[in-house]
Amino acid sequence: MPIVWGVNHAARLVSAKATGELGRTDLEDFLDDLVAAATLSYRKVLDMGGSRLALSGDDMVALGARVRRHEAMGPMGSVAVIASSDEVYDQVSLFESVVDADRPLKIFRDAEMAYAWLTVGLPEGIELSETRRAASRPAVAGAV
Image 1 (spheres, helix red, strand yellow):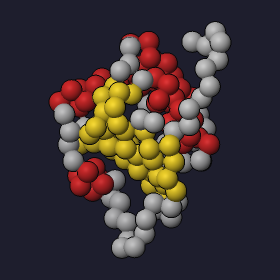
Image 2 (image 1 turned 180 degrees about the horizontal axis):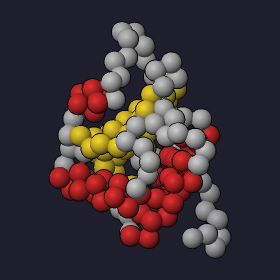
Image 3 (image 1 turned 90 degrees about the vertical axis):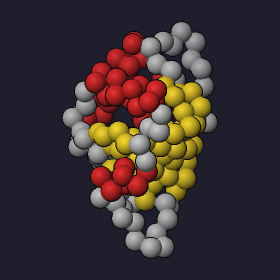
Image 4 (image 1 turned 45 degrees about the vertical axis):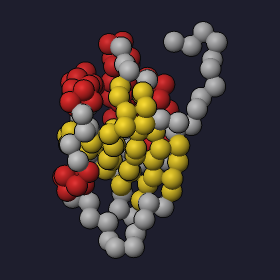
């Protein structure tokens, strides 16, 4: 699975690591998992150092609409994306401009700066309490 994530409920923090090529379904599954875990209002860090986005313009528009629907559920937490390559940095920047969600999002080159921006300093000894993989959804005939 391209996105593995964990959550620390005490710190209200989701930490995710993406690997490989991320398509629309990968990101939809991740968003659905965040909704199911009731973590949309939590701060999030997404490390995309080992991945890239493979999204068409239509995919970006559809994902943007989904994120904006999630906003109607309540406040969304800040998102820090770690993009170590110029390609991923540009892809995430373009994605963010299309999504245009009402929550802070910043792109960083390293984890230290991303976590500092989120002002998350997990106390010593506190670990992510859950580790999950974005669930694979079965293919639905005729699904777009």
